[in-house]
Length: 327
Image (cartoon, rainbow, N blue to C red; front, side):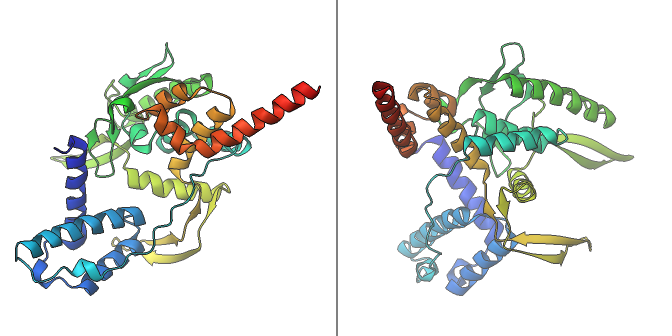
């Protein structure tokens, strides 16, 4: 029997298929149609390559079932070859780079984007976990964060990915001071929109405007994960942590001219989580503590993911011992 998370993942994949293909006549779906849809998705930047790959796997499975049940004659997905998956080593910032990033963040005007990035860097949270936080999850007296929700890319608030992902972690003085300031700034912003701040208010928020009888009304939502990732790329390029291959001017559906950037390479949000882990390894923090802080299912998961960093740290320990004995 599949897990609830697996069913949710499958449901999300199917929703993405519908978003890309609408309600097509599957017995007339051609390989070229599928290639064209994926090409447009890449161009629009709506889905990452890994998301397109996951969508294709699900679509291929659906079509295989249709073939097995004589609903269609053949599976057009078989002829569609996706780009070879680029499996890169997990990247992380050095201590010096992480310190520079923190300096840049603290120099910026506090905002939901900056707050989310601070949480990723200083707590090692997954992006969805940071977006899922509410003020009731932050204890300013104990200086702890409670991770009990994640806000996924389909804009759904769900439990974390595993039992161990439900956790409570400590925050340092730097982040605690920032969160206290941000809460006051957010409350002031909400007052200007006549919106209240409660324990259920997202720490990382967006303001929406709805049409209501007699005018418009502001409401609070969680920040969309895709919007955060786009803002992160722009921020990284602006501050020397990434670059775009090209840019071009486009006209949106509203008639406004915008600059569209493509071919991003550089720092990614999830690499801030790896940065947290590698810095903790470098500080000789025990694996059990790192595992609990990151919300891994077991210490073996942490060991397998960060084995190369742990080995490098072990080599430094051996050299330090040599120097100590020689001295």
